[in-house]
Structure formats: structure tokens, C-alpha cells
Image 1: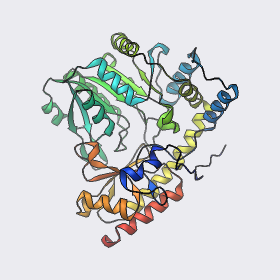
Image 2: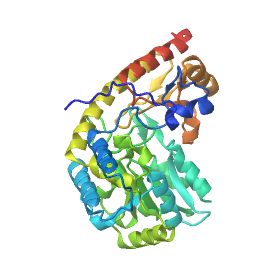
Image 3: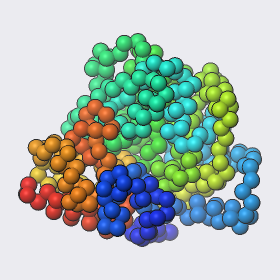
Image 4: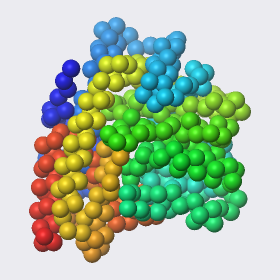
Length: 391
């Protein structure tokens, strides 16, 4: 089966955060601008998801959802067949997305004032949730190696004070695009044990891995099960973030019971649309769509990297996963404000500012290339024109 990822879908005026908020936030009009900021794709959802929604519409009654056994079985099938990870059906919690999952975990396993370790630069929502919950952000900066980011445990060991209770892992890494090797994950497990830290492993991008790299679920690392909370979702993989559905997966009985108690106390339950969409996505038909998507994104990645790296002083970090290019403008000698001005005002492209991702991100911008190829090519042309004086 073929999929039309080149199709231009008009999302303006559809309550799309990506399109309808880029002008108030970045000063880039949706009429002639290119949104390459928030992490959703401009592609229609996979056919099995559309079919599931059609079936719901045909019934026409949107009542309470019951008997989620087929939904749980779909999650188990996907994780075993796509990631070699076998999970117990009772270990699965459903949350309103993974930001909600992180918030629930912090409420469950930490107290106000506790330290939460972030390996920065990293997904900006983590910072926001930690601070809003009254916990303290502990920034452990990633080392910038030749092939991308690297964990720097010698430096991080020296930073720990004993007030830290949790470390959040972003795997694959957003925004750096790294797929962490098994030995790196084992070293993180050892770090967590040395400092008595719980690991929250956000693996929302685990299906979006390019040829040549292999994702290892943190759950497959030895000796970490009693201090591990896994987080996965269909949202990024299948472009259905609006269904606000994610999974927290906890096998340890003590951790599982504590999380269940907290979720019950808050009266939280999933929505029927999200469960039906996730079950449809985690299927052989959904897998075929993802395989085709990866091929398309890989070519978009090549085009964007080649075009941006041709600009003197601009360097895109080598990517192994996600659809989010992490681009360093330090070599241009420009202040971050000038680079941002050229991208947003001259090139008319809305991008995420690197400083929002924490320490180490100040000279970077994040570009979302999960959009029809014609837009990626146009973005490259605009960028080269905006920085033409450097060439």
C-alpha cells in the first residue's frame, strides 16, 4: 500500500496549535509562513485510525468505554513485535498523554522541594511541569561529542547532593535525536542506583528511529525494574497527539500500587476516542504505515541537513531518531537573537528556541521536518537566502 505524505492539508483555522498559534507566538503568519516548531506532523493519520473513527461515527453514540482488554493486547503486541519488550497487561496505565504521565509520577513519587534531574538540553515541558509542581529542576548538562550528545556521569556524580529523587530520561533524545546505546542506558541505571533515584523513561519517540540505529527500551536494562517507570504513546508515532492518550507502564508492585492510588484519587479515566485510536494504530496495518513514514522522514532529514549544513557556521546535529532537527548557529558568530530574527522574520519559519530546552541549548534552534517535502525544500531555500551574506 502507498501513502500520500506529499499531500498538502490546509490546517489553518482548524484549532491547530502548530498553525494557528505560530503568529501570536513567533510573529510568523500562517498565510506565507512555515511552522516547524511544535512536534506534530502535517500528515493525515494512518488508515486504520481513520477507519476506527469511522466505525465510532457510524454507531453515533459516544458513551463510556468498557472492556479495554483488546486495547491492552494491542499495546502488548506492539511492544513485543516492534521493540522486543514483553509487558504484563496489568502493568499498563492510561494517562492523558505523557506530560500528564510525568506530572502524575512526580506527584506520586516526590515531595515539594525534591530535586528532579534533567539531562539538558531536553524537552521543554519537563522544566515547566517540575517547577509548577513545586519541585526543583537539577540540570545535568549533556556533553557535546562528535556524533551528538553523550552522558557525562563523572560531572553528574559531582552535582548530586542527596536531595534528588528522580531522573527523567528522554529516549530517544528530544531535541538531540540520539538513540542511546545499551551500555549508556546501563550506565544510567548504575547512576540511578548510586544516588537512589527513580527513573522516569519517556520513550514517546521510540518508533521514529532511522535505519542504522536500534532503540533499546529502558525496561530491558538489567537491575533497574524496582526503580523504573516507563512511558510510551501512539501520539508522536501516528500524529494523533490531540487524542491525549499515553501509557505509563510499571511492573514493580510497590511503584505500581502507589501510582494506581494517586491516579484513582484524582478521578482520572481515559477517553474512548483515544483508546480506539491507539488500538487501531498498534496493528499490522499501523506498522506498515510507520515503516513508510520512516522512509519519507529519512529523506526529509537528508534534504534539511544538507541544506542547512551548507550555510557557513550552521550545523545540524547528527540525527538517529525523531523528526526534530537540532541546529546549532554558534559558528555564525551571531547572537541568538539575530539568528532567530533571520529565521522568523526573513525566512518566515517558526521554530523552537534552544534556550527553552535548558542549559546547553542557547545557540540552537529546533526544526520540525515532519511535513510534505515541498515545504522542507522551501524552508531550505528560505534559510539559505536569509543567511546569504555568510556564503
